[in-house]
Length: 343
Ligand SMILES: Nc1ncnc2c1ncn2[C@@H]1O[C@H](COP(=O)(O)OP(=O)(O)OP(=O)(O)O)[C@@H](O)[C@H]1O
Ligand SMILES: [Mg+2]
Image: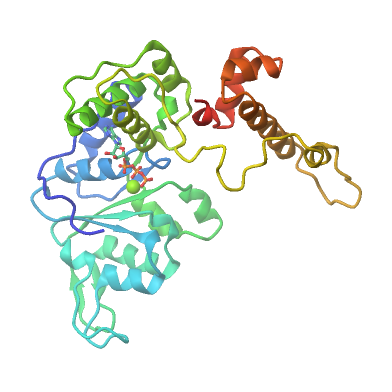
C-alpha cells in the first residue's frame, strides 16, 4: 500500500488476442492525458498492472506513483491516509502527517477498490479532482496539488450510483475514460501464451533449465477451465505445477490446492442412511419459497463428490459408475470447479 517498486518503466503485459491488443492501444492513447481513468474488471484481470502502465506511459513517469486500497480500512483511517492530518487532529495524531494526495503531488495516485468508500470521502475526492484542493484533517489551510487519479473497481459503479451508494458526480468525473479488462475466459487465445510465460518464469526461479511445454491433455485442461480468478489464478496454478514437476513435463494440474477427501466440512464418503434421508424430497409445506436450481446443484455436487471418492478419484471409473461418458463427467466436474480433486 505504499510506493510501488521504483522500476521506472511500464510493466510488461502479455497477450495477443484482439481484445487485449485493443486494450493496450486504449491505454497508450489515454496515458498522456491529465485526466482521471477508471479501470473496471473482474478480480485478477490485471487492473493494477494497467494502472502502472498508465502512469509509466505518462509524462509523470518520473514522479511518484502511489497506490492505496480503499477497501482495506475504516472510513476515518482512509480519510486520514488520503488527506493527511495536523498534529492533534485526533487521539493518537501526535505529529503532522502528509496524506497520499500530498505525497503524490506531480505524480499519480491509484485508488484501488474505490467502490467501497464512504460518500463523504467520495465528496472530498471529487473536490481534489475538480479543483486540486483539500485540507488535512484538523487543519484550516487549503492545500493545492496536481495529482492524476486512476481508480479501479470490480463492481458495477453505475448500478451503485443508481442505488445511491456511489456519488453520481464523482462517477461522471472518473468516467472520462473507462478501461474495461476482459476476463480470461473471453480471450482464449491468451490463455496458453500466458501459461507458457508464467511456466518459463517459474522454471527460472527454481533453477531449472528448460520448460518442456504442456502435454496436449494438460493444454486442453487449461483451455477448458473457466478461470474465475483470471490471470492471478492462472499464474498460481501454473507456478504450482512447475514447482511440483520440477524439470519433468507437466502431467497434471491442481486447480484447488485445498481439495482433499479430508477437507473439514465435507460430507462423509459412505452413502449411509443419513445421506439417503438427506437426499429425499424435502417437505415444502410451510416454506415461503424454495431455491430449486440451487438445491439441485448442491445435490449434483454431493453425488459427484461421493462418486469420485468411492472411485479413488479416478475419473474414468467414476464416469462408468455414474453411467456418464468420460466427457460428460468432466463437464460436470468443471461446472462445479471440482476438477482439482481429480488426481
Ligand atoms: N497481461 C498480463 N501479462 C502478464 N501478467 C499479468 C497480466 N495481467 C495480469 N498479470 C498478473 O496477474 C496478477 C494479477 O494482476 P493484478 O494484480 O494487476 O490484477 P487485479 O485486477 O488488480 O486483481 P484484483 O482485482 O484481485 O486486485 C499479477 O501477478 C499480474 O502481474
Ligand atoms: Mg488489484
